Image (cartoon, rainbow, N blue to C red; front, side, top):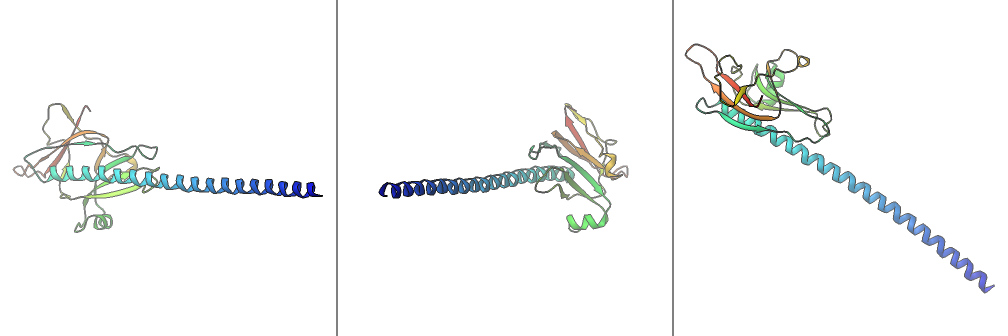
Length: 197
């Protein structure tokens, strides 16, 4: 009888151990799952901030060039490759009072807007950033002079975006200059140049 009790107690001890190991494995899987989700969220947030910084730098370079006819502005435009797809960035001259007043305080009928589009972005698939320059400024190569080592950059936006005037900005090294041609009655022009185009 004594041996039977020992056998039953030993058997019960073994089943308790299996149950404890099973609970430990379940808890470990839960902790690892929550950790993976947290790491993914942190990575997405970090990448989103990098995109915002790159877009902000581009905005400042354009505004600096638009507000000075004395110097040209050099900048390297490089968006981080984060969400498994290349993003598209457009500089648009919008004639939409609703969008302009939403993103550009004080804008009326027209405004310049940087638009970021990436269908695989897990934080924000479309981002808009107001470029503070007169909507009367033209994006044109007609009045632009040449710069050694650079070619004029006039990549139009895709027809799928409609007839909005603008530029499709691709990663690369750019130079932007403002041609203020007030003598001939022409409107001020922003000239984009890209190295190695």
